[in-house]
Amino acid sequence: MADYLNKTVLITGGTDGIGKALVLNYLALGANVVTCGRNQQKIHDLEAESPVGKLCVLNADVSVERDCERLVLQAVNMFGGIDVLINNAGISMRGLLEEGGPGIIPVIKQVMEINFNGAVYTTVYALPYLVKSKGVVVGVSSIAGYRGLPGRSGYSASKFALQGWLEAIKTEVVEKGVHVMWVSPGFTASNIRNSALNHRGLAQGESPLDEQTLMDAATCAGIIVEAVAKRKRTVVMTFQGKQTVFLNKFFPSLADKLVRAFFFRNGNLIK
Image 1 (cartoon, rainbow, N blue to C red):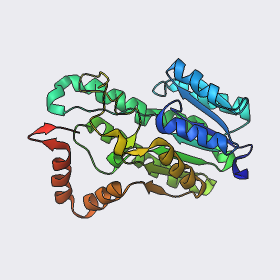
Image 2 (cartoon, one colour):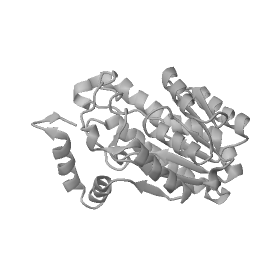
Image 3 (cartoon, rainbow, N blue to C red):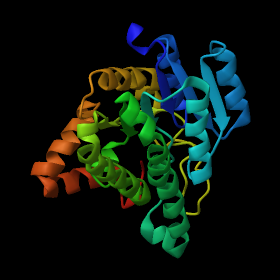
Image 4 (cartoon, rainbow, N blue to C red):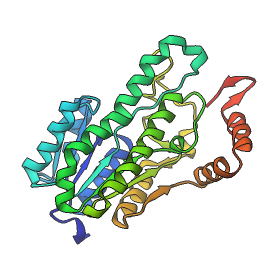
């Protein structure tokens, strides 16, 4: 626990789901935490749960470069630096390309802006301070970063892009003492599916999955915190996720069939 005393952790998208669980986990370990969200009520709720003087929450949108710069500067001004950056903020989508037609293009752009560009903006501005602290950069990715998932074409693209970008900069900064890693939760019980965009760019409002059977956000956050402490290269969290990555790498045609069977029934997207 002493490892995080007087350390500063910056977590994007920390007012809900996995992000909120990460915030509470690091606060319990004694860290100073800076995070952001877009819902003012959720910001107030998080502040009410947290120790005074250890948490800073900004109303910020990671798809806006200036907001990401402001978030980083707030962390440095308040706590003197950054030791861990967790690029967690994200949005999902659920919609078939054929269904959406040209109307799905702005949806894919929005998903890329938040999931990929948001991580780029925040990491770029935080990197000088992470070099100084020999810190850790984390990307919260997905199995969709290893295997494209039907109905989630934009989401898959954003996670493939995130992992490729992180792998590239990992080899750029390794001799500076900065560790770059990514973690891939499986299906996790969180609000991300309820707020996922459909092919028209509207929140779908309900999850197509049985949330009761999924990994909870606190468990997921605990795995991430442990992986960061051990400076792992990457973590695929669930058996189903590990199985999917393995099959897609060595038996891609079989993976195509199994993924199709999992997501479709009678030609309709059911998950």
